[in-house]
Length: 528
Image 1 (tube, rainbow, N blue to C red):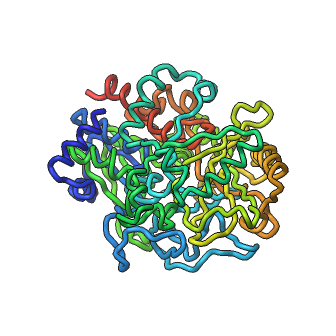
Image 2 (cartoon, rainbow, N blue to C red; image 1 turned 90 degrees about the vertical axis):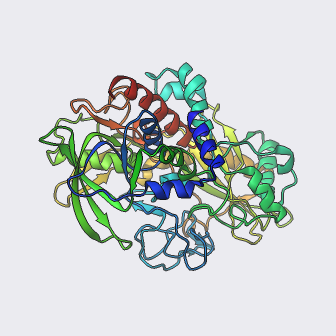
Image 3 (spheres, rainbow, N blue to C red; image 1 turned 90 degrees about the horizontal axis):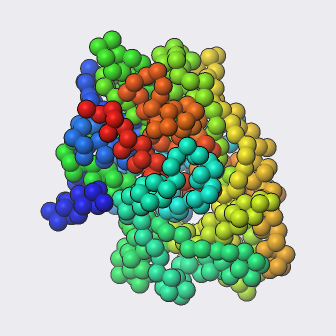
């Protein structure tokens, strides 16, 4: 609860989160020496920064994306799903929407190249969606704050004390993240959740359990959006390109609390390219400063006593695999780069009957999921997702999370100098099979059919992208049981790369809680 008290003190002084972060904004200079350097400002990095600064450690954070604090010409910081512009995507000239087609025709649009907030990073068999900016993935996700089933958590991370996680670290994480529950009575009549009620009722009638999902979006604010008394955000088709209001993203919670200590500096638009032992002790960290079209404007090296890798499953894994292959960190374990998975992600949509409307107004923040995880023949947890098109489409959309056992690895290609991911689209077939069992049953019971025009031409399943990259530096394999990289004292992994490819639910609460556990141990034992 410490971070919540810090934020409350700041609020009492009339200090908004944006002001706190602005004061923490800095630009590292070549030759600087810092006690702790955190690479990445997503969930693992934000936890690390808060707890280090509260422990009295001056901490420098490096983020490749922008600090999203300045409005565009429209007066908004972020653009919406219906009107994407250069703010939407990371260094692309066309959008790359998860639902990229309509009636089989591409719905993507031309945009100017810019360091936008959402990256669609393409590998051989999958696109990986990642947040780019101070706050990382918290800027672009749907906010679903779901704690995994305890039995499955024990299965995926057997060396972690589940009793401590569920008694201490999950509660600590949800409190600091600002998780709140929807008013279920309001939900039953809210126009913006008609789409969720339709899918929930059909799932229930077809024999499946459903449950409400907590969220970091302020449901009290959303009630006011529905009533028309505040500026709309979740009800204005804002979600994957950022929310201008209502959302408790990391820049408003963990990072603001860390900034309030006065011990955090955040250097944005810097891409770390190398980490190696420094001759004077600690580590030399090399980075490129980039402009808003991705061009390098400066290259600099700083020295850090400790380095915390929190660039996300993909970013951390790629960097460490490259450092091992290039001989900068040659003794990293062979397990670095292994155990990557897509959290069993697959999307699907159903066509509703004309008399069963899903609503023209749809909240961008999901509030209900279909829970069929207990089915041993094919566990599925399916988020009832919005399709916030601003008009009636009679479409029910779902992001299914399944227990796909397939994994991939990152490997360095010396010929290209790039790190590649071995995942192939065909590896997602177990996810399709599990989801198909559920949605075939619902379609049969409701006399409905799949939409086959939203993920391509005659393509039912969105099987070639993921919102939930996990693994690559698995806890207890690539690291010790608290994220320490063996053989390199002072190097730590703190993000979703520690989790072996799956959580069974939306993963950010698990990433946050695991980081809380690990940094507590590291501060107690390693930080003098």
